[in-house]
Image (cartoon, rainbow, N blue to C red; front, side, top):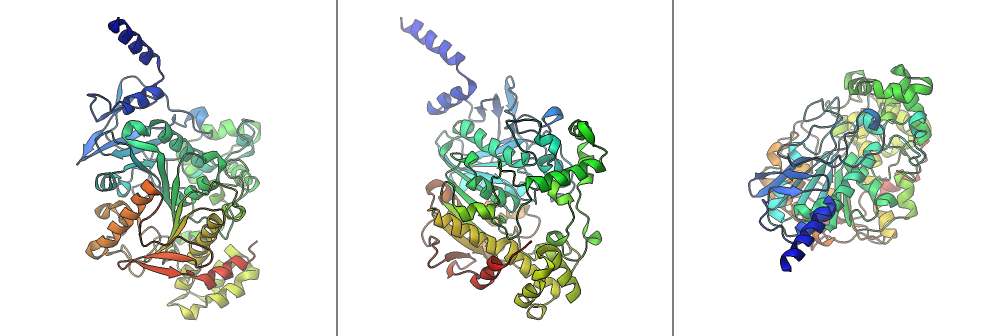
Length: 536
């Protein structure tokens, strides 16, 4: 009988895994289901309307990395019964400093999803936030995906990942714990990969197309985007990528696992954790104790020069390391070798990348020639100081501090970006290079120009929420053009007409300003200089 057949089918459906049920419901249009209720492979979630857009906030993508799961690779989220409210962002990961305020909780592995209300499959933009791997959150208001989702018909996902020592502490005892995971110190990067895997399993239920997932990020998030771009472990998780000011292919290399482990041993010693039980001892410490043990000195206690020139070992316990597993090689070596899937890539930097890092917000000012030379020696080696000073003489800039800002911008952002673009293009990728040149209106500090991170409100359309300045009326056309390019790239892997593809012969790039333009050989002479420099 038909009734018996239907009953049998219903029984079979009930025996399906949650993940398969998600796909079935989405493919069938969900019937009369409430559009604010979505079934994930861990359980149901109920979102909230933000204007015309559905928002599903604080959705767990992995198990809380607490207790014995601290400093272990992320595990699948624990299933829950019923429908979980997803109406506010989850707590940020622990951090001592943040534009959104300090604090947080180790139970922080959440994603936020913004999606139009019908079941149509749309391009997906997955955002990895910046913050030097020590601060920030996917739940920060200026990363809201509402505007992009409702204006450009896309799905936006923002990600929390473990930060600081909780995300990047390496230690020999941690490396030895699991032969199947021969590494330590790159847990934050693996969190991001786990979030991308969650997107592949679940995004259909939110109206997203798992075959059109674009990964993008800024600063530490831009570095992370490049790390996943060149990693075989992330193959198949996204079809295109955008790295904004990502320090990809840096002139100064990432630390080795051995260097990171040595720094982790010293961090553990500060906390009284030595010997055979060092791992257990470290897991017994509070998150605040770990933050305190790896804190960067405030500007007034640093030598002149700012965060790129501080020196010291604390930072090695708070950034990714080259372990041969999560990161097989340095990003510079990876882009040189070209041994990766050549997916479409937008990559770029801001015109005045260095000014923020040498402002009073971050740094003690470099006021003299001696300060300048000392900072250069700490970072690039004393043997290179004369050559760098000849290339960037103080007399050519308003001050010694501004000269060092120019060095920072070229050495850590502009020229490594060119190296990455060249490597991806040689590997066969469609590459689109840019320079963001438009200053914010009403910046929080004067004379910073188009500083690091200032493109963010242009990309997200979150002008009032961004704390460092405004897009302003004059910047709105540029904001619209960038949002269209970013979302078109997610949909089609092309940023739209007028943006030339980067190639090694012409080295064309897009100048992102109120008047869009095309340039060639961006800072070529400076980048040739940095490529030739041998840094210890």
